[in-house]
Length: 124
Image 1 (tube, rainbow, N blue to C red):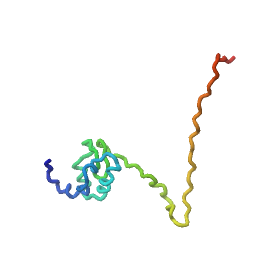
Image 2 (cartoon, helix red, strand yellow):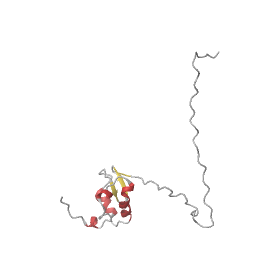
Image 3 (cartoon, one colour):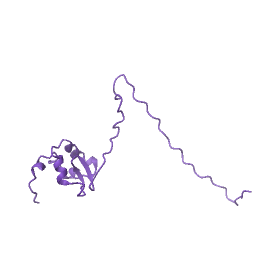
Image 4 (cartoon, rainbow, N blue to C red):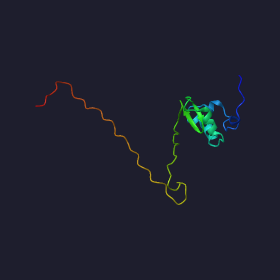
């Protein structure tokens, strides 16, 4: 298949050596290498101007963001990220970890009360 020579900014892109499956991934986990490459890419603005992801229903990574159907995907918070902001890390010697919140349990679901078989009584 014929592929044209890349423009100078495409050759300088940090993602130039990555697999197309990574660059055009729709999920954050598969696109992680491309997102890391975009974070240090010197031509991110040129990339976004050339691709125009919002106008082309683009799926993949462009200019440091993951796009799906031409819309930027909000990054999901990582598990445990931001839990200890504003205070010392729990591994700091001489400090106690923050108190844990008690786990809330859902009440047991009650079954409706069955009436005994027979004629129904009317209230006076």
